[in-house]
Image 1 (cartoon, helix red, strand yellow):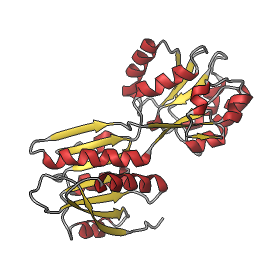
Image 2 (cartoon, rainbow, N blue to C red; image 1 turned 180 degrees about the horizontal axis):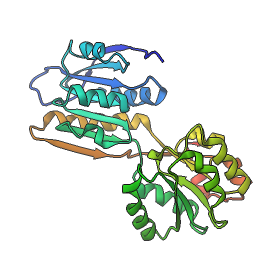
Image 3 (tube, rainbow, N blue to C red; image 1 turned 90 degrees about the vertical axis):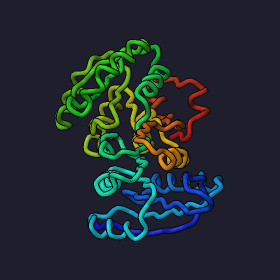
Length: 302
């Protein structure tokens, strides 16, 4: 695939650590030009527009020719970099480890481990938040099947066991080391299972596994809790969604301490605003009565 490259430069406003009205240059690197990335930038611009000092914003889209991309970023050396997505973050950490980086739209905080000044806004909601939602929806039901990858989620298992115990949420752990084994593993689940859920970074819910898992869910009346509205539209019961514009505002708020701190600084946050979508047809088919408060506050209903 050929990477589409675009460039924008504009003057916005944000208080910064430099004196007077000196303009601070921020380089924004996007992995893609998809709508969520554009929404993050819209939120970032909105935040900057409420501030008082000049801020120059340069936006580039990542492309495979990294040498050419790096040469273009050196035309106006950045004071701080905002990266959106894995490719952009990996590129910035490789070439600009001495420049403060605010990384967003990623699932792995280790991508910026070699950068001294970082603010990481993870794409995934806190595990406790996701389990609280499972408890809210399936409070009086059987155990939730937790699909996980033994290597990718090894460090998450102890935490989910502890949180589930505190929340009194019964869970049934299912190790999926190869997605080709998923259909067989699903048929082995106990009949008491009330829902299917997996870690966002497990790579279990993919386009390749969608048919098998959604068909299993529909036939056995066991709802799937997914990670996006696309899955909900296809038949999952619900998914927690990010407010991408608010993520952009959140990024803007974290850029200031990156600029002003003279010492090594590491900031780690998760999306602070939760949206969610639900599939009312799936709920009816599976005879699940969702609380009216959940239905009325849904961001999107299918």
